[in-house]
Length: 390
Image 1 (tube, rainbow, N blue to C red):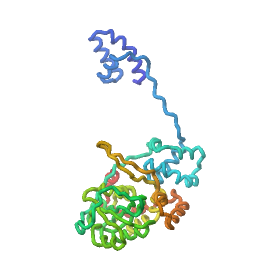
Image 2: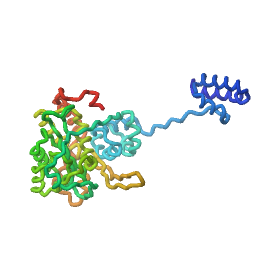
Image 3: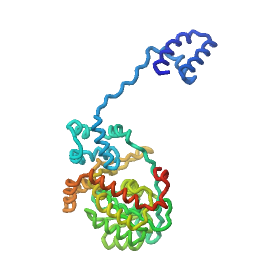
Image 4: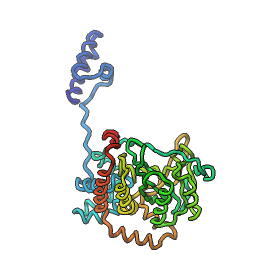
């Protein structure tokens, strides 16, 4: 029975119900519940309430504001950019627009719609395509005691206005078991610009970690001034301490069991490593080479030159709640270019390179490389399919 029919039926029995005896009211109420399918308490409220004046009108449907062509192009950009948050997607659309014109027909109306759509409306129009993925996070870090009390703890929020100070961490690619030797990804995230570099290392050897960090330092478009790590023995050791002293790099560590102290790099561990390589086990030399080729090449350029990110600028406590303020979404390269005194040759070369590179071609190339790396995983120790999706 439809909504209109139930309302008309209510109007017909309403006057008769008010004049009926107690016994007759019980019979009418029972009949009304059976016909309309209402709960008895709800039906009583309707019959004892105000007289229904008219059949309720149906809710007027919202007129479509954005064309289907615009939604399709927005979905293509969203997919190629690895599904960024709506605020980040809104910020990267103008940067990607010249390359959209090369790959698809773009009318002036669709272009205006792409530039005018708000983050809230992006969430609405992309809702049918969005799939929620439950994140399964775990770690394999063992605390290190060597030099632990000689390396200062940094727990407060980073207050830096120049690039060079960042957080480092390791992400394990061990599959569903931690025995034997397997690949780990070393992540460095610059606090000021959100520039991120990754390297793959076999195991957690102190020498390998130091060599990977040195490779990252030489590839950065700015000088490495400070690093902050967790308390794992792969970082808290004489090798890394001596390296930082030799290159005048400030070395601090987080509090034990306080992952929020390294929130910047923990977030990049998810977006720059785990979302790409999943929870599979990689333990071969070929996988190590392929991952490092990707980290040093296309992936590094794609994430730092074309993908936008937001940065926490202030935290304010209001009663029991903590209100966070973020800056406008920008690419790491744009933040470096906006930094005072940072217009050096490396940044100029990167800006010229971004003007030549096609982000859609980069994205397709990265996807192809990732499929090849996934095929190199150790199937014996990979988690079951249902666990990977959870």
